[in-house]
Length: 236
Ligand code: DND
Image (cartoon, protein in one colour):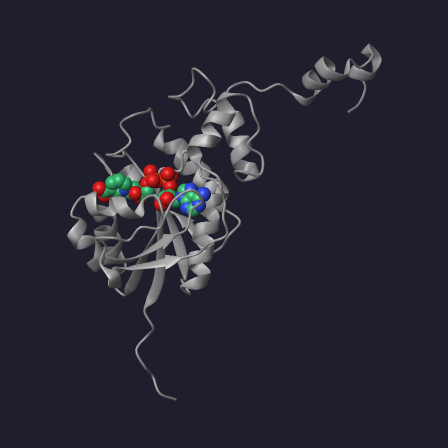
């Protein structure tokens, strides 16, 4: 039997603010995994984002944990603390350099949506990004896939099932008291409720160790169904 060189691993990197992570992110990662025969996709929640200065971004630890919850059921999805544990601003170039140093025999594929693709040219050390990873630009409803100025060999385009979901819309819906069921994974819905994220007046949640008190099922039933006193007290 001939012993050839071990095939290089192919690892996807899905960088994002994930505030919150939603099914659009998960479908993009899953489609890239399948189409590019990737061994795994590492989700990398951002630390301090250089371009998101217009609003308070939710604590990194919350965004990280929501991403862990959202990806837990897929054995080929993992979540990295690389950016949230790195002090200072988050730059993709630093992350790719670090991942390359940790996994020298791996080809990296950075997955990004159509909206982000044209911005890559403005990223820190943009010229060097292409030597560290191949970029996969996925389609996103409402955004043109524009590759002008990007090196042809460095970027592939991928049509993915249209998911007209955005984190901005999810945050607005929660703030307005609307549901986000089926836009984000069930566990993320519950996480958002548990810690009271995105509600008006709680844009910057500063203590993730203390969930906000929840109404118990019984209290909710008593309020909405008006059970007779005996029935309320009955049961286990
Ligand atoms: P976003 O804040 O856009 O993440 O950040 C994307 C990445 O850009 C992060 O890794 C940042 O570190 C990096 N970045 C930004 C700015 C400067 C630099 C780097 C630098 O190095 O100088 P979101 O959570 O909003 O979205 C995550 C990804 O998912 C994005 O690529 C977005 O386009 C994509 N996406 C969708 N794709 C398909 N269908 C949908 C999507 N919603 C989001 N519905």
